[in-house]
Length: 495
Image (cartoon, rainbow, N blue to C red; front, top):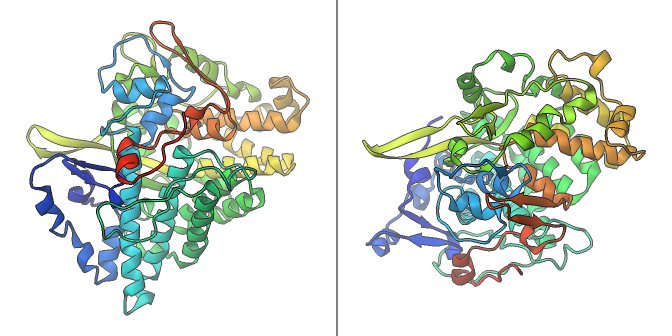
C-alpha cells in the first residue's frame, strides 16, 4: 500500500480540528495556516476523496498506554531504555501531558484529526454533482467518523451504562468541517455520543462497496464495518445485534479466518511471525491502521508482560481448561528473564534524511478473533451456552498444540470445574475474558474488558509501592488533554 507520508508522519505541527488539541512548534505557522495543506480544498473527484479518506483513521496507537494500565503489565526489573513517561505514568494511573507517540494526548489528537478528514470527505460527497460516484466513500467516511468517536468515548468517558448514559459526560461529536481555529465544544452525554455513532453506522453500512478500494485491509469494508458494529453493540449490551453483526461479518465458517497458531504459524520464525501478523494478506486482519509508533520496541519498557504474568496467563493459564498447551510463540528478551512477549510487531521506518525518520507499525484495529469472542459473549448473555461453546471450541482448535476434539473440547463441566463455580454463565464469561487476554496480549484490548467489567488492577513498582485501580475508580476514565480543556473549553473529567 502506498502511504502518503507527508500526511501521515509530519510531527513538526499537529493542528487539531477546532483546536481540541494544538501543538505548533515551528515559526511561520500562521503562513502555513493560510496555505491549503493538501488537496482538501479541491476535492473535485471521487478519487481525491478516496485518497483523503486514508487519513480518516487514527494515526497513533492506543496500545502503549492501554497495555501499561492493564493487568498485562508488571515490573520487569530494569531501567527503561525508551520514553519512560508514556510507560511509567499509565502504569501508576497518573494523569500526564505528552505529545510523544504512544501517549494519551497524542491518541486523542489523532482521533480528531481522523474525524476532521472524514468530515471533509463527507462535505465533498454531499456537494458532488454526481453523488452516486461518491456513495461508497460517503459510507466509509461515516463509519470511520463513528469509529474514532467510539474509541474516544470508550477511553475518555464512563463506560456505557444504560442506567446512567443519559447523564454521564461524553466527548464532543464533531460532524462538520472546521472553519475556525478556536471553537467551544459541548461534551453532551455518553448516550448522545452512542446515538450519533449508531446513526453513522446504520447510515454508512448500506453505502459501502468493497470494490472501491485497491487494498481493502486498510479501509472499512463491509466485513470490517460489521465487525466494528459487533464491538459497538457489545459495549451497548444489545446482544441480539452483536450476534446479527457478527453473522454478517462471517456468513459462513469463521474458523477459516482465524490465525493458524497451531499449524502455519507454528513453523514460522520470529521474523516470519512479525511479517505475517499485521500483514494485509492475513485473513484474520479485518482492518489495519498505519500508526506512528515505537511499540515494536516494547522490550525497552520497564512495565509490561513479565514472567509472573506469563506464568498465570500462558504456562498455567486458561489453555488448561481444555487440558492442552498453548501454541502461542511467547519469547523471552534481554537478560533480566522478565522481559516476555509475543513476536507480533514489525517496525517500519521512513527516512526523512540520513539520520532522521519516523517509525510506524500496522495495527489490527479489528480482527476475526474479536468478532468470534463478541458473538460468544453475546450468546452467553442470552443463555445459549451450547452455541457459545461451539464458537470457543472453534477458537481453541486453532490455539492448542495437537488439538484433539476428544481430549481438548471445552464443555460446561470443564469450565465450571476450572473456575470452581456452579454458575455456568459466570464460568463462560470468565473463560472468554481469559482467552481474550491470552489472544490479544500486547495489543491493548485487555483494557477495554477491564473497563466493561469494572475489573480491579494492581501494579507494583520497583520500590514495592502498590498502585491500585479499584472498581469505579475515577481514574478509569482518561483525563481530557489539557490543551483540549483550554482551547476547546472542555470540562475535565473528575478526579
